[in-house]
Length: 239
Picture 1 (cartoon, one colour):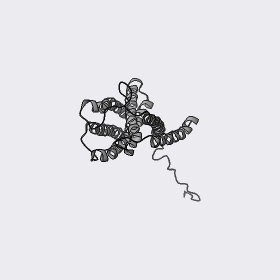
Picture 2 (spheres, rainbow, N blue to C red):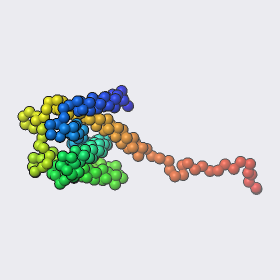
Picture 3 (cartoon, rainbow, N blue to C red):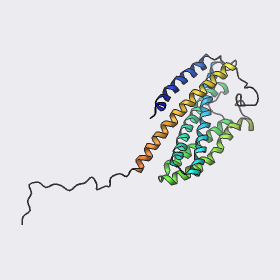
Picture 4 (cartoon, helix red, strand yellow):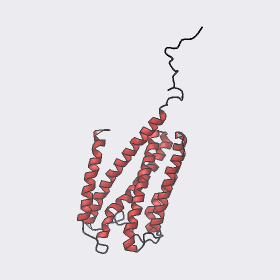
């Protein structure tokens, strides 16, 4: 591991501490109060879910173009990390939604499409585990990784295409963001911090995948290689 790789987790931890402190220092929402502070983790989790699946899409396209194992490993690693952050976003959204909406779950377009995206990429990971041949696995996963990406824009645009309990975009929108500047600064700080955390997770998963592929490529001993003929000392043959 390089010096950068060894220090990156430390950088991630420092940025995460600063970001969470900024979230606690930011003013509470006028309506939701301190409950709104979940935004500083929920929104980065959703952003990193998108990022993971964007990387999976790009790496899948790159695999079809170059057929390099590294692209397949990157696609798989990004999908795993993306699924983790999607699950985190769903859980935090439920925790946030219970006191605001009165229920843990509702058939809201954003919730439904996000859950569907979560299960689609779980299917992607299941497909990879179910296919033993590396080339066949990479080919099938590359197709799946490209097709599954359609979920990402659907999730993002769901609040605009259908009636939703979720508010429309407040940052990535035409014009100025409709959010208090101090809240926006804390949110951006946490987006940066969690993106570095995402990078740490992705690099770690890539190293594990490379080690696994190397172990699979190394031929093991044959069944009889470790068996040697017994040595018979002190035994003579009768003529």
